[in-house]
Amino acid sequence: MKKTVLSFLSSLKLTIALLIIIALASILGTIIPQQYEGGESFRHLSPGLVNAFKSLQLFDMYHSVWFIILMCLLSLNLIVCSVNRFPGSWRLFRKIPSPDRSKPFEDLPPDRVLITKRRRSEVIERVESLLLRRYKKVKRKDTANTISFYGEKGAYSHFGVYIIHLSILIFVSGAMIGSLFGFEAFVNIAEGESTNVVSLRRQKGVRKLDFTVRCDKFSIAYYDNGMPKEYRSNLSFLKNNKAIYQGPLLVNHPVTVNGIRFYQASYGSIPGGQASISIKKGNGEATTIGVKLRDSFYLKEEDARVTISRIEENLMSMGPAVLLNIQSPRGNMRLWVFKDIEEIKEGIPLLFKKVPKFNPGLFKPYYFKLNKIESKYYTGLQLSRDPGASIVAVGSFFIIIGLIIAFFSSHRRLWVRLDEQQGETRITVNATSNRDPVGLRREIEHLLRHLREAVVVG
Image 1: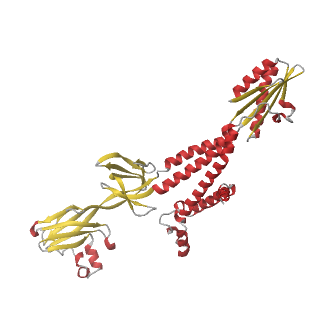
Image 2 (image 1 turned 90 degrees about the horizontal axis):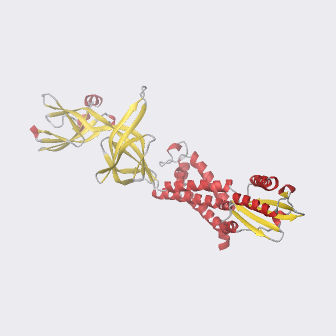
Image 3 (image 1 turned 60 degrees about the vertical axis):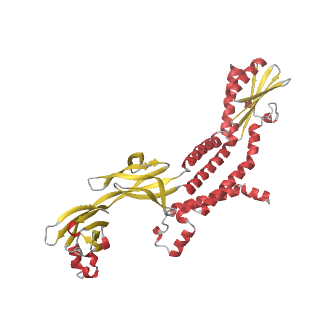
């Protein structure tokens, strides 16, 4: 049973099947938008089909359970394959064949043999010197009638595939770490305000940062046609009330603080927290004041304290309004003050009777009127933290090395035999390689040319 399981896990068929499934899943991930609010782009589909997509986690496929299982299976397959086959590759790497083997010289073509009348000692010296320059490992064996040399290079090429396997495992581990321990979030921060709480995208909910982000200033530049040209946020990142980083954040120029990358994603305007209100007592002249959200002003004659509790840009589709909370000896009172109350009243004649707190003169003898609400910008930030990114970068380095070794190197073994025949020295050359036969043929031709120049002609 154990052998059957190991045989299955080390099967090349399993590797191919997993790679095909992962490739098909990646195609699905390209066709189906990976949205965290899955299904909004598929309103034309039936609710049942959308629910099926959600059940299969196709709207967040790369974080789905089944995709993680596929990657774990591929990792296990690579590990078992590597463990099973590595000892054989190690033996090939360590093995040094005998220089005087006869098999490499069987059935050689005539062009692999050189004949020279030079003295044998001189030929041996020149051949050995040439081989030592071209090969790292050169072994010599002398017998009564022959001198045999063995040289090799590129033995490390047997490990290229294992480096590729290792890089894939590093990739997968980096992706898993990023998926489990990383997060993506967003936050809107009004100009002059700060926060340390962000809204998570994939996991939902909120996350509290261990530092505070403050938007010191937001600015936007426009083209002549009114289109936004550039918008930027001047941000301060504070920890223990001390700035750990301050600087601008621009589109396509993210900022990284404490391992979290911040992107300039959007912007908008909101009621700026300050309202201009006119106050009129009886038939007297109106007085205009500017009050910020949650600030208060006093009506001394009535010993009343008025607080701006809310500022709404478009309350119930009736326009800008502010909520006043009035505390006085008469008790507490809350009333809404609209900017366009006269037009609203004309459209709804019995408005004050139906909704008394919409009456700006409810707190007699005062009459309140909203003049305007100052708007201010907010910056929309996207955040991402991926602790596996550096691991993936290491995997990228290893896969490049592995591919270079696997496809651009080969283990070449060379045999050269010198023997004497009728007063002449015969040099016989042959070589083998685990891949790249064209390169091997060029290697032999190159060696023969140099031997001919050094021994026969020179």
